[in-house]
Length: 528
Ligand code: FRU
Image (tube, rainbow, N blue to C red; front, top):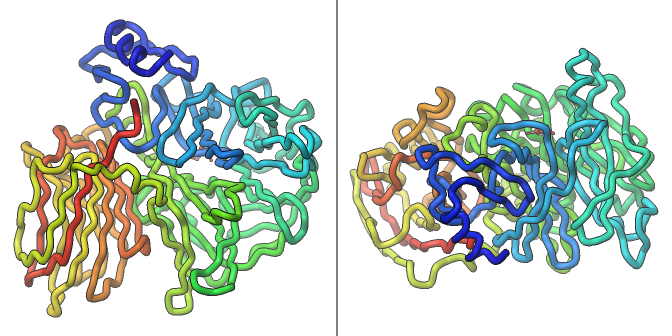
């Protein structure tokens, strides 16, 4: 059905919402969140991925194949809260516009389909396809709820499935599971990659408070290689959704391996977050560079993020996407019809910062294509103290990108930043404290937070700014993503203002600050 016709029908027949995932959901009453058009509900992200309806959590099976970026995701098609997990599916040719496809993997007698990854088996090591038509192979965790209830420890096992038609249909392997639980309750989230050195597949997976690495010649038979992490990194919760990939240190010929490990709870600002390690990996064992705890994103709302596999060498990017929520309140955020979105896809880079490897994240370059030609505004050389309103009405604030270039004052006192405000005086404050040397996002008085006493609060991130400070802020209907100094620091935060933010203020507590330039861009919506 074409989109316009579907939108029209959605409005006309207010009884039932039909999603292209083939699921039917009883439409909520208008009071609960009226559908006034396709992707037009209150708080519905306009330029981020979210499922048409119902619950989503982790991104899964990220793989590029024949011109398409695949995004699978933890999906429960029958409710807006977590339930028996499926793999939802969408594809994109530019990482920005997404096409929903039918559910790829359904639960079966072995269990729910938990998180995992997908690859293109180019030389057909698995035998599921041919070298002419290489199979896409997914590896995921089977979570068996009955076994879990029975008190058994072995309810999480790894299974595989393959597709010979560009991911449109999937066949589960008849001899699943391929990697049986050795007796550990938390044994999940395999991320698979081809290792050029050993000419074998590796998986890295989360095992309670650490990761395990396995290898395989054919994706079906797995050998344990090593364990990492029991006494290193953050340990405030269980480890989940790891990733491991090589990345060149910018401007050098040195390649490091980067390990991402999500942790829940135990993030730097409470609840879920993703830490990373840099080091060496020979296909068997990961040796970290140091014992430092690093976070890929200091905000409260970027979890379980992993990277795309099989990006062509000619492109060469390492592209990451996260789940834009936090297990502390994910199930109760005030959205209707759907729940949760992903972060903007981000390009990861490694830079050498005083002898340490720092992982930076920036919105993928394709994002720039969404900048509206008409809604653009530039401010130059603005000196201010106190609060200064710089924008209202000219740019659709809730669908915008803002780029700020500050020169900090020499006296360096107190803090500066940005306030998004609405007519109810609800305000989201994004600031940098030059005294405490930290960034913060303060959503204590930014609107709707009564759904969970874990939601309101200030998130902070240590940061040593130089004389110049650059901030890149993406604001969508219910989120902000802050990238500082070309992605050296990232903070992602959900926000649910009762009414849309319409005012933008700059503030400087203390001496005057020079805003060298600010650019404001309206961002086009991606859903039609
Ligand atoms: C992370 C996670 C994974 C698990 C999945 C279940 O958010 O808990 O460890 O596979 O979600 O939906």
